[in-house]
Image (cartoon, rainbow, N blue to C red; front, top):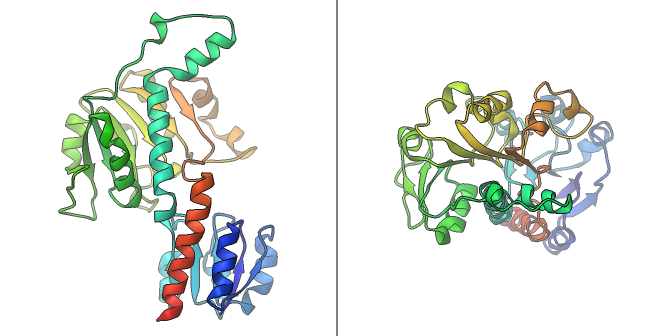
Length: 308
């Protein structure tokens, strides 16, 4: 098998491919146009998020047998069309699930303990204790939407905090374990103090978190999104923050990412001016360790495919 890698990946992946006899061309700086010009030569494509693998791209990839996504979500791939073509789709959510869980809990603790406020104020010569009094996570209820690799990892990371974890997953049943109790959406609306998203982007989940959804929570909540930005209507979250129905919101992902495009989003100024919002640049699953683990998981799965 001959493969093309169009995104940055840990060197261990190249070593593993050589060991199983897969010849790969490593071109992490290549653009889509140049990729399309050479795709007729390859049976394997390794991609992260550089560009969308759609029908027009697959039309110039006649030999393609496997698409390997170096990450969790598959929303930049036309899965339905690829599967109709008989192309095998591989991803590596096991590789970054621990990173995502740790990052989101870090963001949650920063919000609840006003860490960004205290840090900024001290640097500005201001010493305020009462104004920066935090609230504790222990004893609260955390609601997870989605209980796959990332949701399960989040629940395991929360185990030492003395919280109740409720998990809703539309596509699974009977998954209660030592870390989370299976719950309905209604139970999350009734009980959650914290809501964290762990679902892929689909047409069904696009802007699922909107004004109507947020109005259903009985209590004010802390809100975390480390899944996909397009799942959330950002303006509606900002409205809920203004109205006190959300106490703090953490976004690692946004519907529009990177500059200058982000500057043009109609909610961007409101987002950055709201001091109850904490932001990070889509790095929850992108640690030093996950960089290697993703490559290893992907290599293991390709090796299993080759062994069939």
